[in-house]
Length: 279
Image (cartoon, rainbow, N blue to C red; front, side):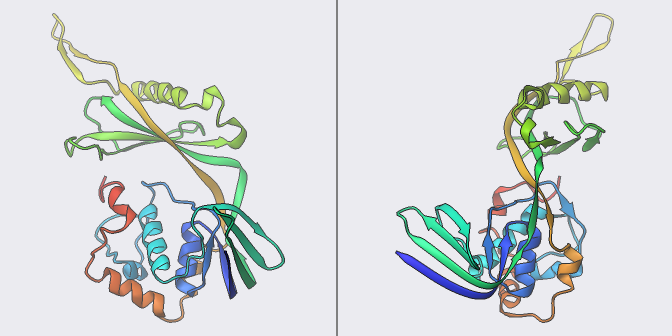
């Protein structure tokens, strides 16, 4: 089976900026590969964000906005991306997808807006840990000069059955692509380095009573690695401010967003399984 579509303008990208540009300009977008932002990366409130159901009452997470925009654009039929893609290629103002079953989708365009300039040398790495033994925290973030274990974020745990005061850890590193699988950049080494830095900051494991002299004792700090997240490093074609300036009128997609979010019934979005609203 073969499907062929034609558009005057087409956005090619997968970042938050490319989705926002597609929304503001009501331009169809081909998802070249989703670039979902880091879950704990927040952004400053802008009054124009009300179109997505936001008010200036809490942090706005970029991953949450990515979810909302991709959902709205899908509802509006502006995301041009067949399911189960095997290959994709560009040829003479065409983007050609081959899917399972050897079906083919061809998208013709006059103008292509390539949005995300990828940095092929470096990646953003996030190592997620369940904190199994740690005394009460006095901070939510620690930063260091090294690119490996550069930032440590302590966020409210989303594990089932954990108290609201419980926090887990995600460690951010910036690693060169060809070093990601080196041992000294591995998940295990990240855990060991994170524990050492926590010790240097005066952190300890859970309390373990007192010795005969009345000195408090503590268990060792214990971290359990759950998964590693790799996010591409890229430069968007336009910044948020530049994109928002392109808004000229409230079109059909804008009105659709108003209808979807005026009652704040947004639990159908993938964000409902993400981190709590506050950390």
